Length: 340
Image (tube, rainbow, N blue to C red; front, side, top):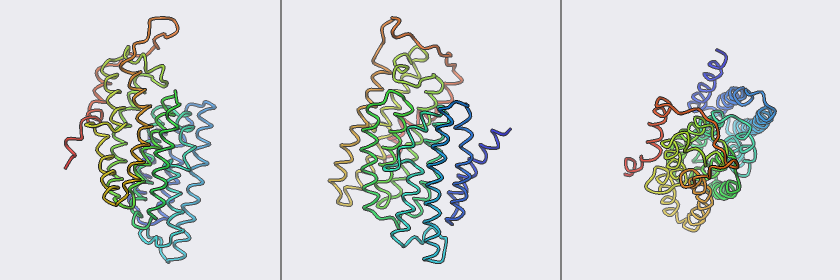
């Protein structure tokens, strides 16, 4: 009963934050959202989980302080708490830093890999997807008042650091954390020029990440070594995982290529071709560890020796795989339906 109430609070706080037009109400809803997710992170009663919950709380509290500072300063300067009246450059930049800290973009991204590693796979799914909706909605509302140079710099740095950080990871939760940082870079980079493209990118990322984490949870897969024996649980799950990873990497004709194509087109339209080229080059870093994981999942058959024993897992039933079918299908082959 208590878990259900906390989950309802998590959902309601996000909905109220996205529907609010006052910075004071948005701050209150984000605080409720933070307090609602903390029991899920620390539920396992493991020192790593307690550490992750502490890091998450401190980071989100700092971001909330910055958000309240920016909102209060803007209300003092303009006489209103309205989100659309962020005409002051200092307050709008401070608000941008606060919201990007909540989402986990460079340079305030260091908390995300550690928090995801200390959480369960389903909790990591919530942090990577649902917890980004409210801050992104607030950024969408104030996108007209954000400094373009600042968002372009944050976006390029996030794609670069996300790619570099994920290349050396053997833990899948940390790898997905750096993947989240890189995708947030794609989202932020076009926020001021075409905010609708940013929203398409973030919701496409959520659609891709949800079945990926669910497959990891159903097959008890947490490391790259576990991926090599994933075929022993379900060949269908292995194939679906490979398609999801390639789609997240942005390979055509899969769904993940669509938002990247829209963003690149917008950057070139805005005469930012050098920046678009650098962003595409940094995306190759992310592509490298996606391809490595896909290779380990589908193309590598480990020898039947004691050094690579098959991990014990429950057999996946048809009911479990059928739950993933709608989201996995949308994550892989939705692109032809979305191209105008």
